[in-house]
Length: 120
Length: 252
Image 1 (cartoon, each protein chain N blue to C red):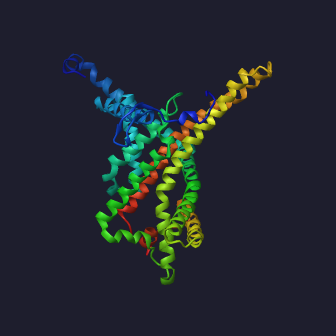
Image 2: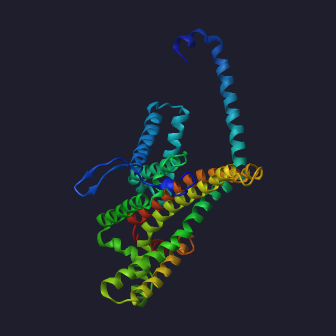
């Protein structure tokens, strides 16, 4: 509102403003009520859906990556030290375990190491 | 050629540059990386140029993306993690815009090449390792030794934790790359069916009529791909935040 305008409409400007602010208040109150009801019905669920899909996308690769890295380390040790096939066997199994740990951890079933120490 | 589903991932040189024996050519992949950065910069600069108290549509999109990344980072790495905000935000925007640009027909998808996603993942992991050692010194290695494990098991558990840590960049990069690659191949295969059904002369009227089915599938898959493009950028960001959290608080 420019100052010139305010001076011209001084007489009737005030009641209109009060009326307007009251209407705005009423609107925001009813909007709040509606939004809360909406959140109760959908909000939580929708957020849960996105998180669920994101988690599902994580799980599969976490496991495969563990096995791949374990096998890779075993293969490197074998080709370096000539201990074939023991390095591959041992580290593939360890990689398998690491993959399972990865999956359980990303599903929240096993606490992260630092989380556990926090609880102590 | 039109129906070869792998053809879209081929790298072609636009401006061949060779330095010594190194091939530093400007390829179509590089072109789309530049395009991604350009689109991101344009989006953010144009969006923040108004700086209105009541945001315009564009400005509110920019604010939404800021708040989205900021709340993701804060919830998994705490307020301390906000020092990594520029890094995480750049990563999120780059992956998201690269994925979305790939959805245009005839565009190249940068994130469908594992070398690109692996470079991004190594950037994250090396940040974690360098920052972790710089801030906590050797205490950072406590990440690999969980508390409360019986003494005899510590070597075994540590080995497993090390493998688990090393698998992080692999799973981070393979996830993004595999999803984009598989999605684009599926899309191309299904929409390729439409063309071959329409073009086949031996099927008579049957061809054009049944070509509706793969067309419906193609439309549905396009929607799914947009969802995956966003979700993969989101998952990449969430995991980056979790790994940065490990660098900030290795063994608390």
